[in-house]
Amino acid sequence: MTNKPLVRAALLLFAGAALAGAGYFAGTRHPATPVPGASMNPVATTASGDKIDAKTGWKVLYWHDPMVPNQHFDKPGKSPFMDMQLQPVYADGGSGSTGIKIDPGLQQNLGIRYATVKNQETTEGFDAVATTQFDESRSGVVQTRVTGYIDRLYARAPMQRIAKGAPIASLFVPDWLAPQEEYLSLKRGAMDSGLLEASRARMRALSIPDSVVAALDRTGKPQTHIVLSSPETGVVSELNVRDGAMVTPGQTLAKVAGLSKLWLIVEIPESLALTVQPGMTVDATFSGDSTQHFKGQIREILPGISTTSRTVQARLEIDNAALKLTPGMLMRVRVAAQKSVSRLLVPSEAVITTGKRSVVIVRNNDSRLQPVNVTVGNDVGNQTEIRSGLKDGQTVVASGQFLIDSEANLKSVLPRLEGRSAGASAPEAASSTSDAPTYETTGKVEKVTPTDITFSHQPVPALGWGPMTMSFNKPTPDAFPDVKPGQTVHFVFKQSEDGYQLTKVEPAGGAK
Image 1 (cartoon, rainbow, N blue to C red):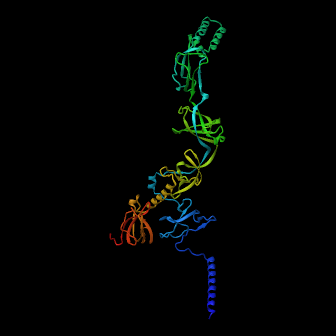
Image 2: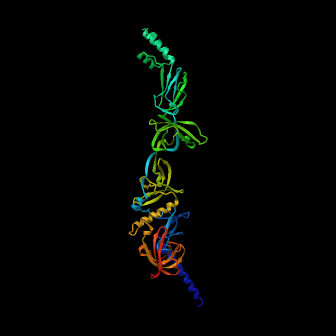
Image 3: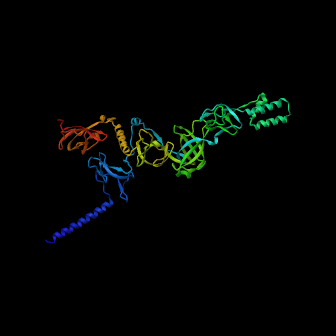
């Protein structure tokens, strides 16, 4: 009799081992079926411990119930708050969906515009600033070769605009009278050609122009006045005489700076000095009118580096035949290399820079909008280079009214748009919270706070909800003062931007 308990214990131990082995064999031959309510999304864990959603390939930060977003879970499963599966939150900001659908009316209200991602041939280069200067090689000097007096001064002050060939001063030269009279006397005396030619040579030596000698032969009247004219179209940069002043040979009366051609002095950063070579193309625009372009090629790199701005100056000549530019103007230039490179470009306004990343809103084939992280490169005019994240031919949102400039706005505006688009598909959808549809059910009050009330409520067929326990926002902290925990009430609620908000709470049965 004393051995029976020992025998019974041995048999139980053997039976347990046999059942464990059978279970292991069955488990290896036939995988276990998922537990009802468990997540159907397979999750893989990397060697570093990161959780990867096998369906999307995205890294999962945590799982949460969208109705209670502040509560995080480290694995998938059924929500303890509602009759639904926990949703993953991804490291790249994705939501597991393929974008949001926006109704056409909202697109029009937001002023959404679209642009196509294009692969274009552009030239390597950089942006810089430049200033216009007088082309010193085109400056003209007005001098006299004779002794005389200013009979009339046409140019009145420095920086006066003047056209090519316009008169600057009329000069009276008394020393011209005697050689001209001598020439006329020899001509009237029918002297031989040798004497006449010698007289002409004497007049040329006295700087009498050939045009005056020709007029002397034609009219027979000596001339003692000569008009000095402008050699260039531009401005009188210097004026050194006045009316009635005496002038001597070699004296400079005025200087004229031409405007038909100007120098453009480009300020090149010291870090780029070695990459700039003569012959590189420059496209310049004036800040006052960006539609006007002035192009040229770098002619020379000026020696020396500015100690204040740490820049090297490059000089080129630009055409100003229309006289639209004046010296001293500040220009924005694009210095381009001679070799072109293929780049993927989007409008610069399509790129949202949050401070931590750069995002572009992409329009998918099904017209849904989805944020995509991109790596940006250099700006090319009003377009930005995209080095990764987009493909040629994709459609992106390029609307200044729609784009936003902070990470917080980026995270808040897309769910709002998604909520708006989802509501637009239902007959009860409205454009404001006050017109939102209402829902009602019955439940037991579990908790009351100044901001919300928690109910264990019955199903809400209109929303597809089963029985659950969840919190609803109060419109004001002092709303529904008579509601106490433990009461069974009938309540009405509607959807708002912050969740679901109560509009009415009354004891079950309708009594107030």
